[in-house]
Length: 528
Ligand code: NAP
Image 1: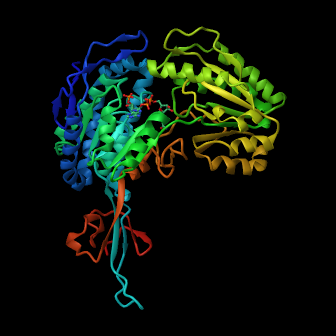
Image 2: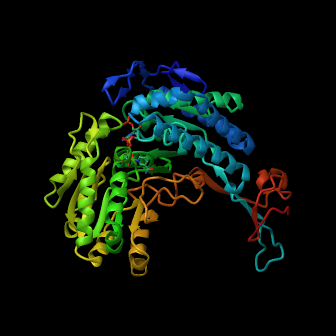
Image 3: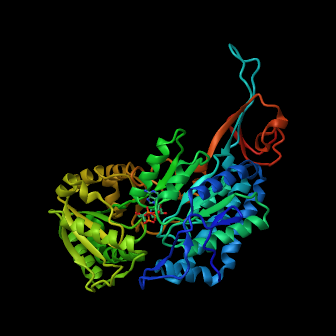
């Protein structure tokens, strides 16, 4: 299948600066043949001008039309067949089976948002009728609903080339909300990005979307990302990636003359608290679960369990021995790209260089270049409380086991944690009663609390929370997964004493969209 190597600006194409870059196959370290054109500042401007021109039309479309667009994107992604999966595998080293699952998740997300916007609850239509006779002052008629923010800039991450990339959760949520999208393609998977972009552009044509509703720009450096985030027409940013990247873009957006929100989903060590009762019953089974979770996808998940906390004793010793034996038998595997594998080597070495940290076990197999060697290290609770370096994420198949003297020290360690995407508790029914304060302390630090499971595996559904206090994200009030992700790209607008014909349909007296609305405090489908 031919891959478009030019930047897509609406339905047009540009060779930008004329400079090119190539993707690298991380398994062989060889360049792939296609040369992708690095976008110019003029391209960034053109993409945002077009996005802005399409905004009013796109935002005002019937929800069903936007839903059909999302469904058509899903259909066009499926129509790419194995070509898409094979290209993604070449560019990321991820196995085809994993990518097939990820495509299912991506198309599922698009269809989920299509269903959700048709239901109309997302606009949160709220009506308070006038009380002209109220004293001392009459009450006006007030009607409020959510409106799309404007053009959204999306940065995908390298570890989810489909589900958190060109047509991933951020793009799906922004388009569902009625916001045009400009994607800065991740340079580790440009061919995958191009194929998905063409699927989106074809869907846009087939469903008659306004020109400029979607653009994709390439850059193997920061220039274009920075130009997009600082462009006056950009209204919000969705970012998935590293803490450094997310924070840099957040700072840039805050320094604009008109600051805009940056919803950055970044790193997390996803602490796991191992209570002694559970370990005394099931140390080996829990160790097996965690050896698998730490090494799943070569540890390249934002929910990878990078931190384990337990209480010293025979149970923890048994767990440690079982985990060490299992980890030693795991094989190093190819990581996503050179940058990630170099960062893994540097950060794991930095962690092991801390005077209080000792290597517990590592894969018996020496890794090939670009492969991540599974490892587990240990440190005391005292060291963890005193040394912030022990709190850093090592992105890859690495976990640090903190051995606390007692439950009190374990609680103190939890209270020193930074913000996290998830926190897990492993315990028995008899241990929960005494763990309420621990659960409370963990809840304050994380977006999702898990009992007796592993943090890897993020269910895409309405009740999922994928976010958490900084540095897990830049705004803990929102989720990047599930239908509530749409809220990041909406803002409320109230209409006061507005003639019925001038109101959006969602707020008109007759309730022509037949949606659920909150009228004078009660939810109803009734007309006024
Ligand atoms: P990354 O290196 O931060 O890259 C993400 C994107 O941002 C790339 O397009 C990158 O462009 C761009 N970028 C990074 N720094 C920038 C800057 N200062 N200015 C402008 N653009 C910048 O992240 P990654 O390596 O792809 O992903 C791995 C990380 O993502 C891990 O830390 C992982 O925990 C995190 N992650 C988080 C979640 C979540 O939901 N919380 C999900 C998945 C992954 P260039 O590549 O051209 O520099």
